[in-house]
Image (cartoon, rainbow, N blue to C red; front, side):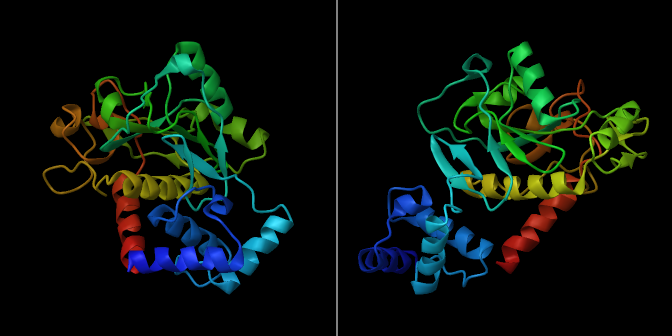
Length: 289
């Protein structure tokens, strides 16, 4: 089936006059089909991954109007990839904050953090000052800000860095910062009162905006597909989301999505983030599509 779509796009390109470069790519391959599917989904077109006349006309119109731009993409090994999210920003961090890698990297775990900052911008400043990094920060409005190409090793989780992709969700955590968000024009930030981590209950703390959760879900879904990372999370003896250190995760043997606290007892992030519900939601989307 895949080769038929590739052959169709090659013939369509010759007949209609478009090229893979229109989608930020250079080859007629599976990646191109994925880009076409994303464009079709965003523009209410039949989603088949093939550039037929209707898809071509819509694409041509947006190019003529300079609306279809090389934006809202993330970097994977030097190539820009659309992830199907409308707010993505490249704001690469200083190169002395991560380790550059030439050969294609194969991360097998996504480590989730909160930044204890009030915005992605302030988080980046703190990271640069400390000489560390993360791959992505999800800002208060759901904008996915990429600091490091996913092929490089960001410094966010010590021994797991080599095998991990880091995602920070911007949150100041402490409730004393609640008014900071409303003063900046945001809705009141959710407050979580029942968090438990490493066997102890925590004081009330700030939660996550719905826009951040949705952006996180889109990003995780894409990264898991791109790197063949299983849609899985650490579980306790009852099969529920683990709220403490997971032995396999701590030894870099776990494949899936984890909270930082699953790696070490010295961390509590991302407490209150229901990775289990997010993963199950992604699985439902995968089944439906």
